[in-house]
Image (cartoon, rainbow, N blue to C red):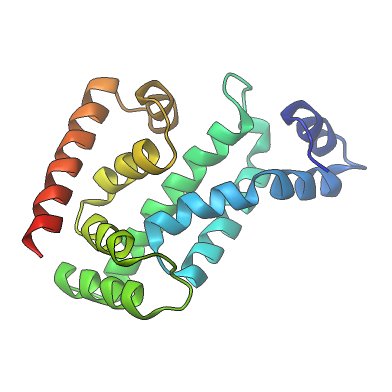
Amino acid sequence: MTYSDQKILELIGNPSTRETGYRALVLSYQKRIYGIIRKMVIIHEDADDVTQNTFIKAFRNIQKFQSNSSLFTWLYRIAINESLNFLEKKKRRFFLPIEDHYEAMENYLSSSHLVSGDYIEIKLQKALLKLPDKQRLVFNMRYFEDLSYEEISKITGTSVGALKASYHHAVKKIEVDVQSE
């Protein structure tokens, strides 16, 4: 059963149905949010953890949701922030030189049974790994999620012009990377 944003918010807002509302929130948006996060953090187990953190953070802060965007847009913003924070912490925690981090992620893409796709798709994913996190994010949102620059701007709080520039730079870097192999 799917619930409208309004119904989910009503359920969460009522102390007697708060838990049901949380389950409805997760059931309604978990797959999409997981997909977004997975494209950023790559590793399935990490994506599961970040997805769980996203929903916990959303639930704890649901009173801050102002209904001037959809619940999905708000969750998307939380998921992006959680993904970027996770990646930053992971790089710092393991003191990985950036090249080692990319190599580890490329190895995961090449060897994991959890990553599906043909040669071209895996080559694209490897090229995406080399992009700065925020460029990769903009590329994923525009290319894979097919969001407009205006939608991405609402989610990220970045100007449309800056998003267009980021996307353009990402595409150029990917083209160079894919052609060089």
